[in-house]
Image (cartoon, rainbow, N blue to C red):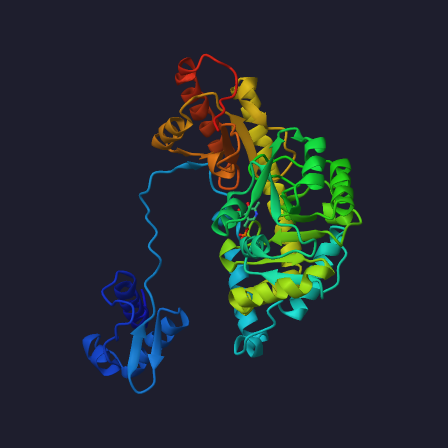
Amino acid sequence: MLHKKELILRSVRLDIVNGVFKPGQKLPAIRQQSEKFNCSVNTIINVYHQLENEHLIYSRPKSGYYVVAQEAHRPSNQKKRIDFSAAAPDPQSIPQLEFRQCLNKAMELFEDSIFTYPDPQGLISLRREIAKLFHQQQVFSSEQQVFIFSGAQQALHLLAGMPFPNGKTNILVEQPTYWGMLSALEAQKQTVIGIERTSSGIDWSTLERHFRNNLIKFFYTIPRFHNPLGTSYTPAEKQRLAELAQAYDVYIIEDDYLADLETNTKADPIRAYNCASHVIYLRSFSKVMLPGLRLAAATIPDSLIPVVSMHKQTADLSTSVLSQGVLEIYLKSGMYEYHAKQMRSLYSQRLQHLRKVLKEVLPTEYLYSTECNGGIFSTIQLFDSNPGDLVSRLENRGVDVLLTDQQFLTSFPKINLLRLSIMRTNEQDIEEGIQIISAELDRHKSVSSSQKPFFWL
Ligand SMILES: Cc1ncc(COP(=O)(O)O)c(C=O)c1O
């Protein structure tokens, strides 16, 4: 049988969770509750303390107890969906308890910094840890060159609008590419040139021509597990890029957002190829940690440090100390390494399964970039003149996918691709989802008799 205190605790907790007491509302006074529940004042005090520990209520001295917030509302009867569209971590795969512990520890360890505005470049102790992490990837830099950003998106946005020491003004991007970079460039009205990147890479003579003739300030590239293609450059291609960048005084923004998922220990970033003066090496922590922490780190060539410092400070004074603290504790304790290893293995199994199922189920003409050997994405090519219609039909059948049209510059000839992400799927989802995609592709095959890709300008 439950103790009286437990019964009262449950009753008050339920009233908070069910919204009988709303956030900000004062709870009945202790004496009033003790009369209502026919118990001692101490029992109610204990109940309120317990609810305070659960962060459901807080006390205001000489006033009483108030509701903090209701439990998050999680709809339980929502129909299951197969989500190939999400590029954010699977909540099931995140060790939430560990993160909570790190968050509590960060409050304690970084108490002094929380009450001030810290270094805009990032906590020096964290930058030291990041420099060590980068070393493991053959990216050698000092903590003075490391910057912490509020997500890779912030870094991209700031870099997009900055003057660069080469004095050039145009920006070269792969086509397709990460939509967030395209929107940052568009918002800042930058002059952007696209270079096609297909499942087999880019055309090197075109790249060199752009570098030579088109006043390229920087080339934004996602060499590893490209978004949306999922493919990677070979070591020889990365070396060539590094050489061209130096030869033509073009900077490279190397967006290594999925470095943690690399299974090939020999796959070094471009920055490892002796080109520290021209490469901004950028890592996001959103894909194996929590995107909500908004954390990324970059190593910046010395010539850019003053201008990056100035822009970062103007943008937000500094990245959240609490988030930085969590990352530092996570890195120092070894939790990061352990968790990244788990994620690497989980996502790699899922991607291999996706590749296998795609090959078994879909005719080869649809398989566009399905030979990726890591990361989270694969793409299939569509020959339908109305791909949006296919996406809606899939949505109605419970399958979420992403068309890559937002990942092209408006002026660039588009190829119709469906991006498939394995982040929030499991093997069963993959099998069911690809069968549904196959059925829908078949249904509309007759609409387009041509097997050629569909382009528009
Ligand atoms: C290639 C690429 N770069 C950068 C980002 C943004 O990362 P962050 O969450 O660190 O801002 C994303 C997000 O999906 C991405 O796909």
